[in-house]
Length: 102
Image 1 (cartoon, rainbow, N blue to C red):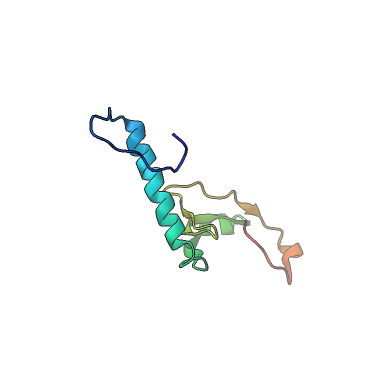
Image 2 (tube, rainbow, N blue to C red):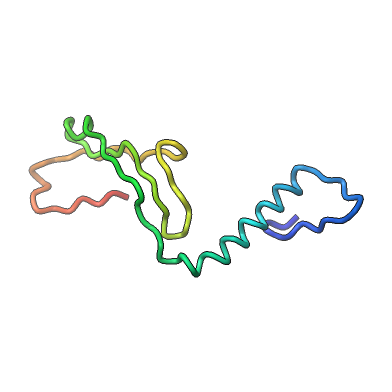
């Protein structure tokens, strides 16, 4: 089956797991297509928490982050996704600097 196409259900069909997986991909694609224009500018960080222990060691590290990416995908770390690696801080070079986390 082509990815994201509707399943052709009919009487007598020998139903397998792939049929339900394909149907779910079809539904998810329809939901995405219908909501992307409505919510195209609704993205950003919902919850953000820095690790205080790592800050004391001279590193910037997240202990929790969740939000919606610009493409609409949802991230939730550390529960479902991996946290980014800590960033080493050199205090002397950070005077009047902006730190960007990617």
